[in-house]
Length: 534
Ligand code: SGN
Ligand code: CA
Image 1: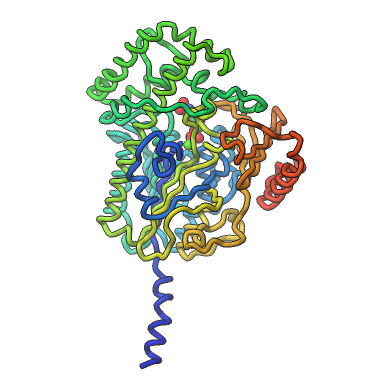
Image 2: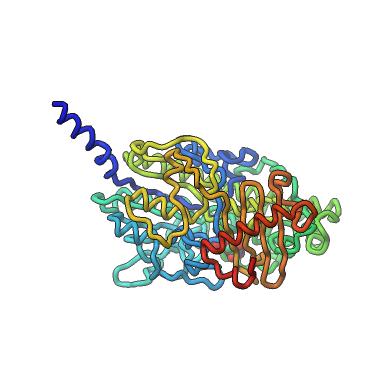
């Protein structure tokens, strides 16, 4: 008897280990932690996104390797930094789909692989059993999709009716419910366009957040003293945000550089919906023109003066733009949160949540008026960071609450591979997060992160830079058409306003950080080290 018990007992862990967990990877576009209430309650409530964190874990130090869509997606898919996966920037990048990717490895491990939504890697997806993607950035209203087709290697383009965030969710549920092969575990990538520019809201939420006045970030009127690259950017709410395209104040006699693109995007709406849309924004435009008949002169002032020197009236106009931006962005988040809730409900009600890891993240963070900005790209905190929360299959023994170790989007590939029981190839540069998730707090977990951004010259004019971040410090080097180092002590200066590089007393920490940076450049084999030896 005793012997029988022993055999059965010893078999149990093996049976458990053989369980094949599914993965649902939900990635949004430009959704930042300041607009997710489990990270920050200042601006919006996101009860459904928060559910993931409440039932699972929230990573408090989650970062990207290159804060831009295509590059970030390539890092996630390969588990490698940009210089290794080859997709360094959106402008000239074409993802080499013949390389090793995590979906391919998952497929080899017996998983079914599917992607629905934004792809943004130019080449046709490889390694997926099913794909139904957006061309380029996609559209919020009555969007085009490209669906795989066995007769056409590059797929077939078609139009879907409705609002994009709802459609991507419907398609994802439909794939789980009706299209997948139920004999296999799966990894499903649900890639939303929300909350990417041009922040076109779902019509039912046009009025949402209209009564709210969002508070200005402390450093909204940053002058970029001592930070040349920050001063040279073209992503400022005052200076660069387009009154028609971004702020949506539009009338037939108004014209800006981007007004044509705006009108094209909105005109995708069906007639009746366009009427509702116009009714809403036209009435705001009428009020706006009454209040700011001098908006062109004010705009000129925002384009020519330092933020600290704006007149009271120009400040008022700048803050008007900020409020419009925040409100429209918040409306997009509202639809997104609803849809994630609907998706989680489906997982629960179908029984899938018992066996499925749910990951929610974004392709990078975003500026919500910090430094006066929108957009991303910089290694400064708001866009270097990205939200990351996970909910676990009931049968996987994990921890709950906050995980405070530094993690990066190159870590997702090895995490999913380990969960699938697949071998993690040597050349993958990320680390599996499973030990952290299981609460093992490995002593040798990384103490610093490497970052490298390349897209310059380009839209928003953020200069190329690379850098290292530790728990407390950040050291960055802006290069190419300039050569400037920046150092921040985030403990003393969490808003990264004071570049202390070269200041007396920082010699030791600078030396240590350069040593660490060099170590990472060698470890990750970044050829930039040859151009700027350390
Ligand atoms: C578009 C946007 C930019 C944005 C890039 C990259 N302009 O070009 O504002 O920085 O995408 O974003 S838009 O006029 O087309 O909205 S990314 O997230 O896809 O990398
Ligand atoms: Ca993005």
